[in-house]
Image 1 (cartoon, rainbow over the protein chains, first blue to last red):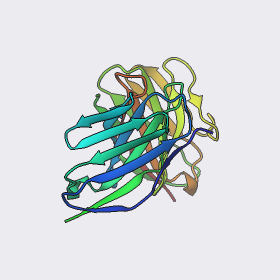
Image 2: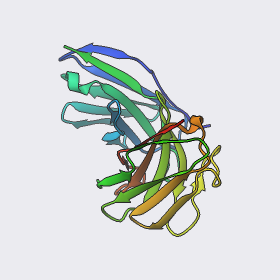
Image 3: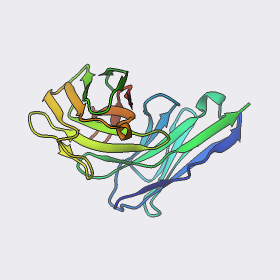
Image 4: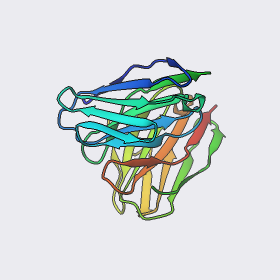
Length: 110
Length: 114
């Protein structure tokens, strides 16, 4: 059974701090990795994709991938209250399908 | 990305009835998927909607309960049949546009079964 594990949180960080969200996955052959943000009552929104080992930066977001450790993370710099949401990690599972983690709830407090 | 719409956005239905949810995309897409998200839970894939052929269902989901159509590359429907309160959930369609795994989600349909 292919699995994606995330700490459910809540992860509470002060405004302006760095939020670090982590995800591990079980399938060594996975090649594509995604982070989705989901606000309460809304559908998931794709915010980052990463395919190669290392870091990928987009604005305040940095995705990090380590395939040897089967680990992917998302850093949010200068966290804002508007970043408060559930962050879903998703990993390619074959046949064009994604396997989603349970999500980490992030709370950024002023 | 793509602009994805779903109808209805929400509905309240009686047990034993059926509801058909529509997913419309503003451009032709390769893959379309249907997910369920129960309160406080993550996403569970119901099936892959295949254009011109029968959908591919995940373990635990069957065609009799969740018939799916995909008549063309921009439209799909999911029917929730013979509903029970356990079917109360948010139903989401998603599509891939560029990369094979990069999925974008519709706004969802919030279903309550009484």
